Image 1 (tube, one colour):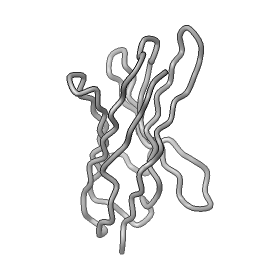
Image 2 (cartoon, rainbow, N blue to C red; image 1 turned 180 degrees about the vertical axis):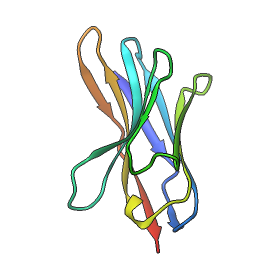
Image 3 (cartoon, rainbow, N blue to C red; image 1 turned 90 degrees about the vertical axis):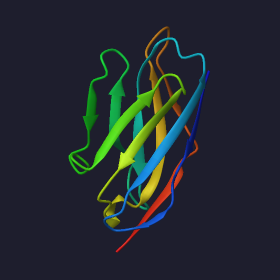
Length: 119
């Protein structure tokens, strides 16, 4: 099992910045990637940023490229999402995600943290 706990969501004005944190604990063997998803009201959950644990390759949604940065602190067992130049359309609940591929494929989710960007 892997436990994920997000923090850092808040209300911010457009153009502002936030940093989300996701502390992870548990049996992390076989986890090949971790990242962030978001879900806005009435919309499907979408990938925001993912980081591969082998080599650190990062992928971003087109809508956040150049504004958001995913990183990981192994010593703190934490992944971060630095969000700059926030826009009202970034308003959503942000979820931390971990993908295990071995020995079985399992996806883990945090409880979510609310980000609201006012115009």
